[in-house]
Image: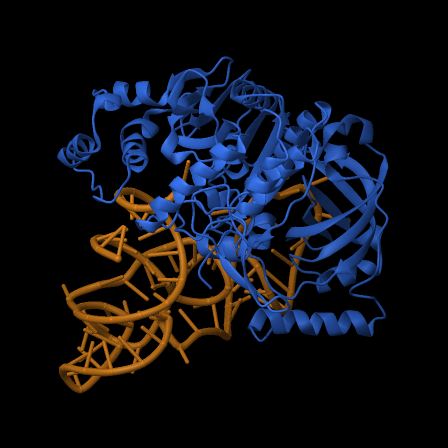
Length: 505
RNA sequence: GGGCCGUUAACUCAGCUGGUAGAGUACUGGAUUUUUAAUCCAGGAGUCGUGGGUCCGAAUCCCACACGGCCUACCA
């Protein structure tokens, strides 16, 4: 380690720093301000003394004067370091490098080019860096390195920082929304003996003490419902789910989901919650970009990419304007299929459907049960067309073993999924609370499983027992946090909104 | 799983009709008291992803592998 030319030079500098009795890695530094505070009301700060800290990102030497740029979490400011102000310590600047953390004390002023600047009276090394940072102009471009060394990405690109700050704001916003409505935030097991609540292959692990296989959860559903049974009435959990499947632009093997359950509510109430949450998210302030200094013209690929403000209830995603004004469009599952395939799938038997799919060049295995065939048709013909926020409602029973039968049609369940820009964003039911019916549904899944559908859900007897004690009518909802973060940060890939996305190791 | 593209200095890239490497940034030394992709002068820095093959000679051509990107398929 640290055997590159530049690293050796820095280690030599580190030695000199130590020799001169300076701690290269001191313990703390008191800041009176953050850089964004200074930028936000710069008139108030002119000639004022401030003390703050950050990482050096650029150094421009001019003999007896040195300019440097220093960056903290939200912002950046220029330092003016002058020999006859700093005296002897001016020489120590030679031992500093781009990448080092320093604390500074100085007065705010504007240069003749109107750049907000700190005239430094005193500086303190807070951490000596040994590795050189990526190039300042192009930044870090290589996507692999960006994901593997996200810290470098964050240092080099304000846009990336902005995305992840936004992500936190989104979660916080939803949490406040739910807390206000007296939902209780809870935590349920990630390690589960029986996985359930969704269709997916799990990650498998092994617990030595119990000599038993365990699974990483694919969903929080069955545990949260147990809490509804327990009388907690309104619960939610932000959590990671894990699915042992491929990864692409929209899928990461571990991903963040919000699930919430509300007693005495149904799926119509859940639709309203989705609409309201998105309305809140559209109102989130841009707290970051407007305190970051403008980049110069023609600079950096991302000068034009700074997160766009939402205007009213409209966002722009990948060049398309999307409006979240209530009410969102609602179409039943079968109507949407009819609209986009041109055929009434409800009237067709399985063989006719398979034939139709094959004529359209969609590979469908003969073993598919009806639900899966319909699902495939939906994914192919309908989902990509759902750009504007849309609720697809009233799904066939086969694929929804945890949803309650539709009040007007025994072949359907009260379920919806919401789609935006062709992406599935949420999934919700009027929850099935009839224990005997739940047994039947699990048995049906068991049959699918025996026929080779390894994603069919597994019978969970303990859950049935819990249901046997009585669960009130309940509405349940899951929202994909990664995907809504993509929407609100105009990110093309899920990897752009997960700090450390899964990569091959 | 399939297709296309990529992997060269710490970073961003050039070099690819085969003759064993080049620029900018960064770094080092020097000049410079309002610069901001600072500028000017000088300099150091690369087992050209890995392993094979063809050839007198491979960053360059061929094969395999690894990692990545985009698209596509699967998986909700």
